[in-house]
Length: 80
Image (tube, rainbow, N blue to C red; front, side, top):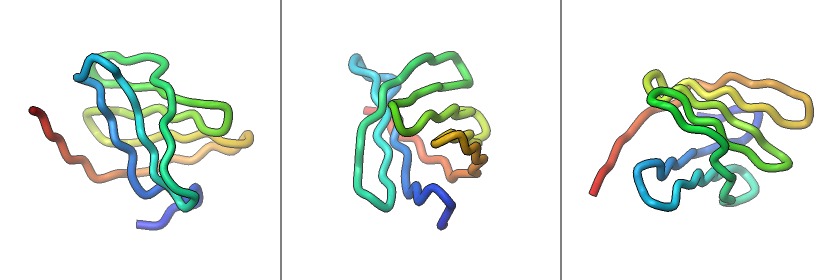
């Protein structure tokens, strides 16, 4: 599904030792830093993009260049 930011996927590795967030968008794939994590919310960001993800509802609030977007995402979970 297309959105104004061009985000295709957001992959969360929150249960691993090295917590990380990988964002795929129209420009490729990049990793952004997790800032905080609670039971139902994850905040991550870098100099260009900041995201707040509700882990229960898969709603994403994204901020870039002083613009604010709300995205509804599909949710898939996988554990090893």
